Length: 596
Image 1 (cartoon, helix red, strand yellow):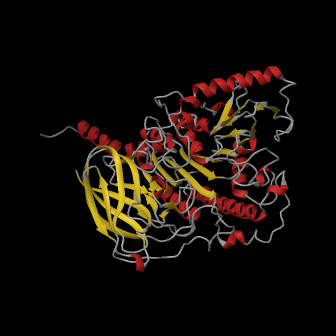
Image 2 (cartoon, one colour):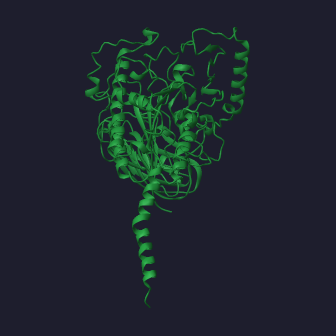
Image 3 (cartoon, helix red, strand yellow):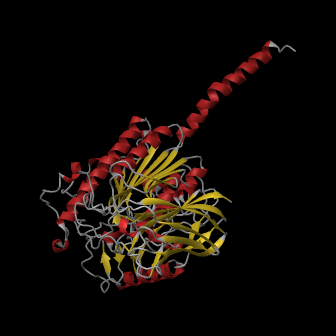
């Protein structure tokens, strides 16, 4: 049957629209959604930037974000790492998601929380995270099961070696890093942007510096090792100058990497359609210059929780403006979703509020608000003008950040109002933390192949001890008795058969121990037959002596396949025979599902 000329023309036009114009429309639609890049520093204080007046270092790339975008003069986070990350991810105070520690499972966000990555992913964004997660290791607490399509980095609170790191996590697989870790993360981030340049992406880069151990490449250290500092902490007798130099060298390396990311965005032609956010997770990790503020990391005083925050979006945000209104990490989720035009529901009320009006320079009066800080048994509250500290002292923050003159008696009404508000917040929020010390570690999450059970999440019994009091990057050692054991309180989410790989070290004179892994009635056994006794490492790269554990290489041992039934219980690793003076040093179990 022949078609008429009119019908033929109609078909040709239709084909042209579908083949040529529709892809262009889709591309245009995608490009109208702004990309978002969030960069988070680890333990960098407000004073660790030349933009904020520190002449000890030079951070031109981060400073340029403030000059080209907006800077928040009074931006607040939590006193330590994992709570701040939880607040950024959820837009809610960390206590609401039961994050109340930095290791041993206490850093995990409740599973009914909705993350910023999930919100952007549902809106059609590609999502990726590179760096320090610190909100849970085992799925469904793992980054890949909380909204990030791509993850490369580490899930614990700190890392033991920043050069060609072992045991980094790439989408659940153990891999070895390439070179200095911050540089490695940046390389990955830049490659990700290049691959996803034609689709809107949400990219979260969480650097691990200047968190200890204090390691930095020679290029940056050499500029500081013999440098005479010109600015010191307000109590200079408390400052460790060598530590300060290492921290500042790490900050300059991080600034270089921030510059690489921003240059890559420009190179890809994405600058005018990309929102870049920069902030840090808590106050400085040592006593060093910080604008005269009281406190450092771990403190609920100003110096522990006031951090830099810059937002840059060329052509959309007026450059060089400083915002004086108080704001916080809890505001970033609603702000970025608002800027991206994403309508969302987190399922729970947010504590944060969108800062879009402030960013736009709108002259509409900004409502008064209070921001709360808490860590362990200490808490404080900040208004636009005042801070009430953990001891009930009141300080006028507009006269200076030092908290040196208590005005509670001079301003009794203000002190009482803030005290009442803080107590109400403590009752409504802090008191609701469910400190389940026995909350199990999850194993066998459906659809996620591997489960790591590291030493930091286990419990040593008998003579077994950690390589350091800080669990995060530790291993178990001094396994000198058959009666000793290592246990994990676990919940098997979906039963099945799991291949077990164990990472150990053992000198030649002590090989031969028979070990057993048991869960319920099921068990497997294996024998340590290969000697592997490498030295401790890390000190060769440290610029100052560390407090945390040193690291070493580890030998994988295929222990066999064990069937794990669904449910909760204790996973036990123990020795049946020990012919030598010790069983082994232990770092990690990797459980890989092989069948249901």
